[in-house]
Image 1: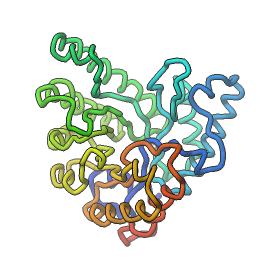
Image 2 (image 1 turned 180 degrees about the vertical axis):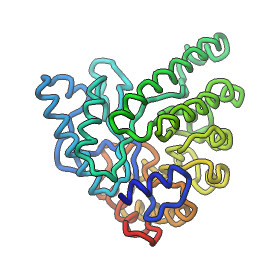
Image 3 (image 1 turned 180 degrees about the horizontal axis):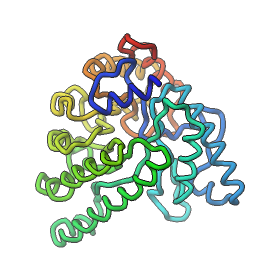
Length: 326
């Protein structure tokens, strides 16, 4: 079970014995990678119960086979709806209890060394709406309530997912954009950091790992985030100016850092450019451990497979530590 051991070591901020683990926050290119169709979102909801059961089984086979081919140490299972509006295209999502059914089938089908990760939320993120921004200053108690409800729902979901075989939970909580953090230090102290600490502590008691995802440049808040007990931070957004080496210097061995391969490069670059960026990242980041390779955000369905496979092939060549084969 080498890949599982490598991922657990990375999440524990240690150097894996084998290779840098590979994991994607959200891989949307299953169809292109597999040559088959994964049925999710609104399409899934149009099916009969019998058709849904068949689709979930087929989904699991595709997701697992592709994950094994890519060499993933973990698979992010389909997430909850981020948008319920009719006609809105929703990527890599399943409704309600269908997520639990999919997780159970994935655990049946997946090899023992492929970990399952799931998004539960837990921490409030940036909301640029007028209402939210006004409430930050005029009605802070309502933000207190929102933060409490967010973490409470996440903890309940984590318990159900753990019982289905999920080993790490993710809170997709954007806290910054390209210009810097959304929340001020005082707002972080009130609505983010204590909840990160509580979420991390409670999830750890369930025997699971915690991963925070945020776009944007979080450099100013990295030290405080690393002090919460969180296991891992995903994105390390190069588009926003974040550098893996600088982030590592700030957090030391307190936080596992995941991602950092530019999603834009994967989408519009050439295979040789992806290869160079991947090799440089591996050569500068793998030595100390606590590092997981992946895209800086979701791998979109439009990403050319030649580009993505260039990243994977480069990892196979340069991602090992030399004591165990990839």
